[in-house]
Image (cartoon, rainbow, N blue to C red):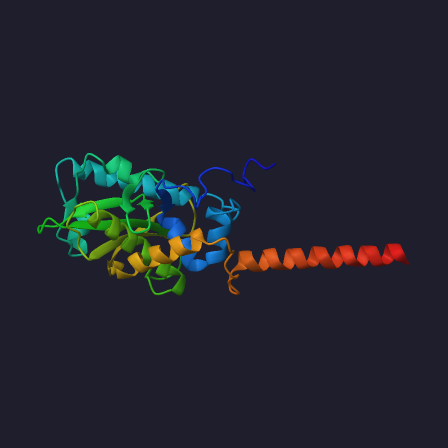
Length: 262
C-alpha cells in the first residue's frame, strides 16, 4: 500500500444511523458541487480521489504573507499595499486566529437543519472602520500578464471566499460582503533566476454572495443519507477514469477467456 494514498478509509465516514454532527470541510462542499458521485465515494464509502502533490512554493508564499501581515497585526497598522489599492482596513487581531487558519480545525459552525459541522481554514482576516470583518485569501501563481478572476475554474476561488464569509457570520461577526484575493504573480520575464523569484502583488476585490450555501448543504445531506451512489458526472475526469478502467478490465478478461477456450 502506498504511503502517499490510502485507497480505503474506514474512519471519519458518514453513518446514517449516527446522531453525532458530521464534519464537512469547505473543500468537500466544493467536491460535491464538482461531482456528487466523487463526494459520495469519498465521504460515504471511504474511497477518495488521489490527492494532488503539495504546492511547496505556493505554501511558502502563503506562510511568508501570514508572517508579514502578523507583524502589522500587533499594532493594528495597515499594510503599504492597502494604500496602493485603496483599502481602508487593518489586519484583524483575534485570539482564535491560529485555530481559524488551521486547515484541520478552522472556523466551524454547526448547521442544525442538517447536523453538518462545516469548517474551513482562512488565510487572513482584516477589519474595516465599520468593524466589519474582511475575508482574505492568498493566491500564488506565475503567468504572463495580469492576474484576474475571469477563468471558469476560478469560480471555486469565489465560492471559497463565500463559504468563509458564511462561517464567520455564523460565528457572530459582522462581515463585509467584499473579500480580497492577495494574488502573487511570479515574474518569469527575468533574464536569469539568480537564486530568487520576484513577485508582483495585486489585491483583487470580490463581492461575495453566500445565499447558495444553505440550499447546497440540504442537498449534501440528502445525498449522504441515501443508500444510492449518485450518477457519474460526464465531465468528471475521475469518474470517466473509473468507468473506462473497469470496462477495459472486463474487455481484457473476456478476451483472455476466449483465447483459453480456443
